[in-house]
Image (cartoon, rainbow, N blue to C red):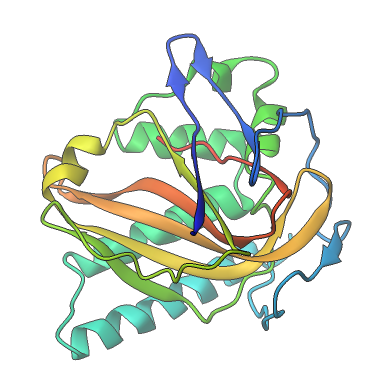
Length: 248
C-alpha cells in the first residue's frame, strides 16, 4: 500500500498556520531561521540527480529564467504532440512568479503576489514575526538546488481527476499541501496541471534530501488565469520533518 500524507497550510480567521509534518507520523512545528544555501548537510536517500539550477544571490533572475526556459521547452513539446496546455503563455508566467516567490522571494514578495491576484493576505504575514514565519514556512525549497529535467503533467481535465501517475511503493512518502480553498471552485470544473521539479529539499533538521517538488496550477476562468492551487513533495524519506509552504 502506498503511504500518503495530507497536510494543509490553513488560512484560518486568526491568521496563517505554518505547519510542519513528520512524514509517516505527526510532528510539531518548530521555529527555524533560514540557513544559508550552502549550510545544509546533504543526505542522499534516493539516487542523486544532476541539479543544474542552483540559485545564488548574484544570479537569482538568471536561475529563475533558466527554470522557466525548461518549462517553456516542455510546454512546446506538449503542444507539438497535441497535448497543449491551455493559455500556455500565462501558465509559464505564473510558474515563473511562483518559483521566484517561493524559491528566492521575501515575505513582502509573497504579500504582493497574493494582492496582485485578488487573494486574501493572512494576518500573520502583517505582524512583527512575519519575516521569520515566512522563512520557516518555505525552508523546504528555499535556495534549493533543482534539476531542469522538469515534468508537466495534467492532473485534472474539466473537473475530471485523471489517474495518478505516481507509482505505488512502500518506501516512498508523499506530502500534499493545500490552502484554505480560494481556488477550489475553479478546480471542480476546470483544468489542473502540475510542474514537477527534482531537487534537494531541506528538512527542519537542516538536512537536504533528494525529492521532487510539484507545483499544481488550476485554471480559474473568473480571473482568466492560472493560479497556484497545491504543492506536493514526492519521494520524501520516512521520518523527515518538512515545513509546509503556505498556499493561497
